[in-house]
Image (cartoon, rainbow, N blue to C red; front, side):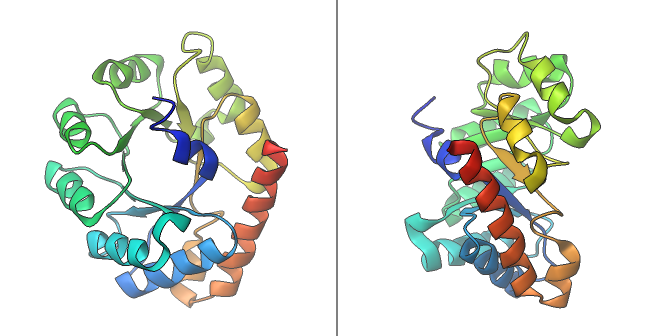
Length: 212
């Protein structure tokens, strides 16, 4: 499992990308990568997400860690894997969908919030349990989950900001998903790529400080 998560650990922060069009998604991802955040989770809220994934891989290769998010159907999981996604993220943990995601051979991250949900995800064999929405409990909640699940790879998503990133990792995060504070929807709609790069730079600096 450690080997499978090496890229996620090294990347540290995954930008949860939701864009109105494939073109805006590509421009937004490019801007975020320029700022130093190489992890891009292209959500299925974005039109033609598999095509965006395929193009980002063609543009950035191994310099970026590209995956699919908001995977809610088996068909989406298959299409994202076929496009080359390195990881698949679902907001929840449905057994049939999770098994199909695992069958692709990609790194699988599925959502949970309660201890019972975490146990269910781990029992299915997911690589990472996405704690979502992590903003409801904050870093202290993630730390509390570490009690019964000391070895579980947990990734908070929601409420992750540059100024609290260190707290999330201190609480035991294997990586962190960042949405609006990084891949800001207003900036994407406005085409303000400079703002996205600036946001990414702040996250990259915060993660560099965490890693020392």
